[in-house]
Structure formats: structure tokens, C-alpha cells
Amino acid sequence: MRIDGLRGWKDSLVEFRFPVVALAGENGAGKSTVLKAAAAAYGDGKKKPESKAFYPDDFFPNTPWEVVKGVTLTYQIRRGDSSDTIALRKPTSRWRGMPERFTRPVFFLDISRTQPINTTVGYGKLANQRNFSGDLNPFSEKDTALLSRIMNKAYTRSVMASMEGKQIGILSTGDGDYSNFHQGAGEDATADLVALLREAPKHSLVIIDEVEASLHPRAQKRLLRELFAIARDSRMQFILSTHSPYILEQLPAEARVHIQLERNGTRNLLYGVTSNLSLSLMDDEDHPDLTLYCEDDRAVQMVDALIAQECPELRRRVAIVEAGPASVIRTLGDLAGKDKLTSASMGVLDGDQGESDGCIRLPGDAAPERVVYPNMPEDQVEIVAGRLGVRTGDLLDAIDDALRIENHHAWTRRIAELLGSRMRQTRVWEDFVAVWALNLDPTERASFVDSIDAALPKH
Image (cartoon, rainbow, N blue to C red; front, side, top):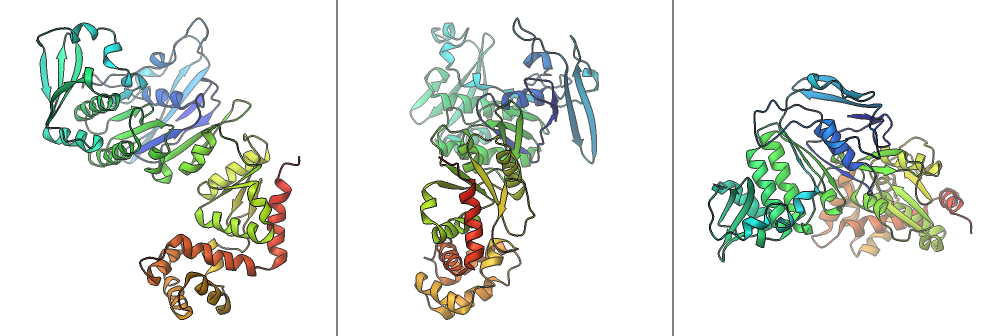
């Protein structure tokens, strides 16, 4: 989806690379704009009364303070093996392109779903009625089990009651029945979500704003696992917004998108960010003098070991963050070099990557594991073995066995497994890189650390 001319978005491309995608970012970064623009992509055909066709004016109306015009929303839509591009345009006063929209059931859940039912207009009167005179729509056993798994509670029954045009969820446990009026906000919102999902047909688009709202961390994780299963089984697509690291941790890299708002109001979309990076970009805590963004935890440990050997006092002034793949590091390095991030930063690429603005490269010309394990002399392996408390011969055999695996990311895990069930991967890698950094050519080590020192703000 490409957004141009709307709420500060200027010809910006947003990609949805996985059936379940979560958008993260600070308040005002533009997450809700993306969700609403996505909801307006399709017509519905009115096949299902539970869903509706959304229009851009539903989300982006003219007001006494804003006039929406000069906007283009362009969508690339894949259906089976074919891809088509359509555009909704509002050059002046009227949106154009509506008849060209494809048909698809769309469901949009905004943050109002967490509003307590007794504060919602029209519900107070129902609570005071002594007798129920509406319709009952019981959940199936499968849907009740889904709700039970998410909330980790043993519901014996779940029902959606309809009365005077209002929906009231009723849950049953061994202690009896209780309605929305006596449920927690998380139960209420999740029951409504399950009620929606059981009615949504295959291939629906479901959009949820602040998906974690009112749910504790374990429930957030369980909810994401259930959404994955539904996306797979019913071929549904989910677009979410979140501020929660617990949500981001459940997603594969291609499903995480962070919207970074620059000081001048433009936006950068970072794909594949780690949950730690996304959280650090959103928090208000004090930052170190310099943040180094690395591709993974192996690189983080390598950088820390080099600094510890060459100039240990720098460790108090530098934060080293696992940020994501090389593409993310290059983007962050470019933004840092242009002074567009909120604090002094630098990217650190693995040695097998090319030069990039705002970045330095780790010593060696390969990935960290390929730099350390195959090239370590036997006398240095003996030192590592002493640190790990294992025999040198056993460690050498473990290295030889691990190097037969094509995927170098698996080498550390394999070495740890062969050294015994109590050996942690993190300890193996930390001890190897500590010895490697100690014995690295002093000139090469100094050059790397000097580049970091030069990037520190001067007080």
C-alpha cells in the first residue's frame, strides 16, 4: 500500500510481508493511518452483515480544522497468482476509484472495544432490567475452547446475547454466569474478538488497533498463537498495531514493522526489527551516549568483547542493541549519519557486508561464527576449554562436528549440545569471542574501537 498526501505521509510504501503483520511506533507515528487506509482498500458486496464496506471518508473526514484533499492511496492486491493495482484518489472534494475496489470481507476493531460496557451509550438501561427478553447465540465448543486458551480459564459456556439491538457477552465457569457488566476488560474484548472471528468467512481481512489492549503478557502471547492458527487454517489476513514487546516477540522478522517518525515529520519504515529495538525507539528512558545497532546477539557479544579488550571504559557510554537484518542496520546507519534519530547512533554490520553510510563493519570478511570458529588456533581453543571447564579434545571434536553443518547460525548450539546438557549457548559464544578478541591483531582491534570512540558525542 502506498500512501501519499495523508496526515503527513508522502509517497510512502507499506509492505505486508506475512499473513499476520504488526505495526509498532510511537503515538503519532502513523499506525492508525495505515490501519484505516488498509480497511478502505476493499468493497464488501454485503454478503455478510457482520462485516461492512469501509470508505476513506469513514476514517479521514473533513472537519472544521482539517480539509482532506490531494490524497492518493494505491494498493497492490494479490489474488491467487495474479496481482492488480488500484488507486483511491481525492484530488479535491470527492474520493474517486470506489467502483474499482475488489470485494473482500473486512473487519476493523478499534480501541473503543476495550471501553467498559456500562459506560457505552444505551447499555445502562439494559443492566437494570430484571428479565431478559432477547436472543441468545451460543458459541460452539470450538470457539469456547479458543476463548479458554487465550484467557487460560476453563469456560464451560459462552454466549452472545442480543437485546434491543445491543450485544452482551455472557461467560460461564464453575462459579456461574457473568456478563460483560461483570467481566474484566480483557475478557470482554477477547470474547468480542472471538465472536467476530467465528463469523468471519475465509480470506477475510481483520484489522485490530492496539491488539494487546487490556491483556496481560501471557494472554498476549496466547492470542498471537491463535491468530497464527486462524490465519493458516482460514487463509485470513491480520493487520495489527501494538506497543507491546510481547506481541512483537511472537512474530517472525518479516511480520514486524516499526514506523520511525523523524524530527522533520517524515517517516521511515523499518522491517524485521527486533522487539528490543522497537521498544528502545519508543521509550522515554535516558539513553547512553552512543547506541550501536548490530544484526544479532552474536554480533552484540563480539562488539562488547572488542571494546572490553581495547577500551573497557567505553562500555559505560555505549549501548549495544540487536536490531535485525543487515537491511535494518543500513537504514539505521543512514538515519544516524543524517542526524535523524533521537540519539547518537551507529550501525555495525557483519564483516561479510559491504560498506554503508553511518556503519562500521566487524573485523573479518565473514559472519561472526565463520570468523571465530574455523580460524581459532588450537592453543586458543585450549584457553576457551579452560574457561568452559571442559577437555580441549572434547571441545575440538565439538567444533569439528559443528562445522559440518551448513548453517553457521547453528554452530554454537551444536557445540553447546555436544559439551553437555548444562552448557549454555551464550556461555560458549561469550568465551570464544573473549579469547578471539584478546588475540586479534592489535591494530585491527584498535581501528574498530577507535571508530566507535570517534562517534561518541564530545562533551
